[in-house]
Length: 336
Ligand SMILES: NC(=O)c1ccc[n+]([C@@H]2O[C@H](COP(=O)([O-])OP(=O)(O)OC[C@H]3O[C@@H](n4cnc5c(N)ncnc54)[C@H](O)[C@@H]3O)[C@@H](O)[C@H]2O)c1
Ligand SMILES: O=P(O)(O)OC[C@H](O)CO
Image 1 (cartoon, rainbow, N blue to C red):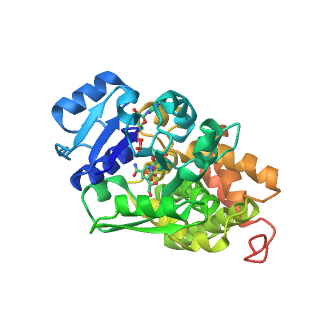
Image 2 (cartoon, rainbow, N blue to C red):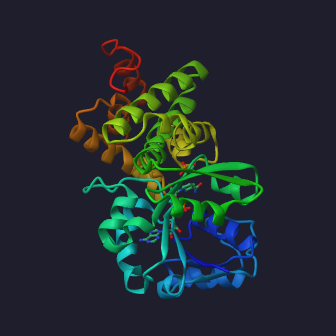
Image 3 (cartoon, rainbow, N blue to C red):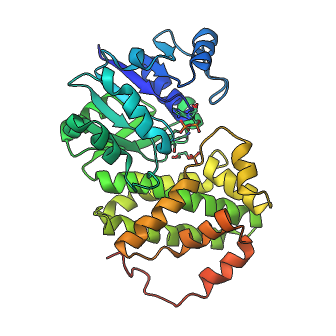
C-alpha cells in the first residue's frame, strides 16, 4: 500500500493526516518544531491545533523532514502559504523521482504573486506533471469529525488528480477533479479576503441583505481577477468558488471570518495576529491580490477597502459608503 508524507501539522495538515491514517494508510506528519512533533507522537493528539482527535496507529509524527519525504509515493503540502517555498527547499533533497505532490494550502506568495503550484514547480522543476491542488469548503474540524464534505482536486495531469482523488475519498469526504488549476487555486485563496469582510459585516450587525450582497460582489471580484489570470469562470460557481466562499463567510470555525469579527470589535490587526498561532491567510492574500489586480488591470474595490481597514486602520463603517456610492456598473462587467 502507498505511504504518504504530510508536510505541515496545523489544523488542516493534521486533519488530512487523520483522514488518511483512519483509512489504514501509513502516514507521516511533519511538524517544523521537533519538540512539538515529539509531544504529538507521544500524546497521540495535536492539542495545539486540532484538539480532541486521537491519532490511529497508522499515523506517525516526526520533526525530521527526511523521514516524512524519503520513500513516500505521495506528499501533501499544507504549510502557511508564505512558508511554502522555504519548506520546499527543505524537502527537496529527499524527494523521490516519481513522488506525487498535492498542495492543500490556500494563498498567494507576497512579492512573487505566485500560486502554490507555481512555487512548487519553480522550486522543484522536475515535478511539473506530478503536482495537484486540493480546495473547497473544508473547515478542518468538520472534516476531522467526519461530517459530510466535498472537495475538488485540480491538476493539469488528469491521472494525478485521479490518484489523489482515490487516496482521499471516504464515505464522508467526496472529491471531484478539475483541470482548472488557476481557478481552483485562486478561488480557494481569494475567498479568504471576502471571509474577513463577512466577519466584519457580522461584527457590525449589518444583517443578511448586506452579507448576501457582500458575498455576491466578492465573488464577482474573485471571478474578475481569476478570469483575467486565465481561470475558467465556471470554476467560481463550483466548490473552490462559491462553495468555499459560503462555508468561510458563514462559519464561526473560519479563522478569517473570526479575524473580521475581532476587527469590527475594534481590535488592532497586530494584536489579533499576535494572539494566535493559527494562520488567517486572507490578510496576506489581500495584499497579493491587489498587486495581481494591478498587473491584470482589474478592479477589486472590496479588497481595496479591506486593505485600508487591515493596514491603515480605516474604521470599517467608513469603508461601507465608499463601496455603496461607487459609480454604478453592469453586474457582470469585467467578468464575461
Ligand atoms: N484549517 C482549515 O480548516 C483549512 C482548510 C483548508 C485549507 N487550509 C489551508 O491550509 C494551510 C495551513 O493551514 P492550517 O489550518 O493547517 O494551519 P494552522 O493555522 O492551524 O496552523 C499553522 C501551522 O503552520 C505551522 N508553521 C508556522 N510556521 C511554519 C514554517 N515556517 N514552516 C512550516 N510550518 C509552519 C505552525 O506550526 C502550525 O502547525 C493554510 O493555507 C490554510 O488556508 C486550512
Ligand atoms: O479557517 P479559515 O478561514 O482559514 O478557512 C478554512 C478553509 O479554507 C475553509 O474551506
